[in-house]
Length: 133
Image (tube, rainbow, N blue to C red; front, side):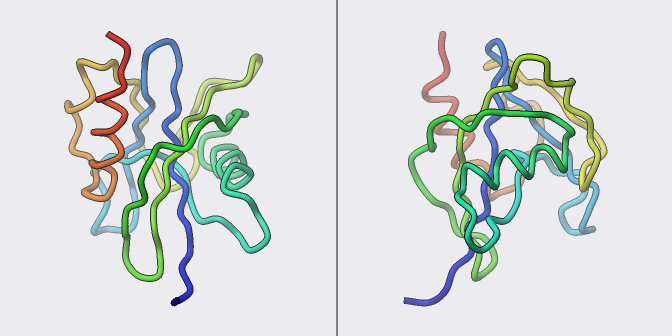
């Protein structure tokens, strides 16, 4: 089996809304929307990576929740796994600190109002299927 690197994406949920982040870099991804997150470092759990990445990228403190079923290929050797996450009490509001130029909270009716990155679409579809009505 070849080596692979897990990239964690955060389905950051707050009062029936999902946080979407617009990429500012690299140029081929700029302007498209994603679930924020990043690479799991050696020796780090996906949940710990999620907490660290959201602190670095958005300046927030979160608690990792459940993994969204599935795994989606990115450019080799990367694969995307998505986990739900919730802001901890007292956490500041998310701000686009790294790699993003805009954030948007989307309700279930607004999930498809932004042009998601192709690799995030299957996870967003799974989240939409579970969305409370």
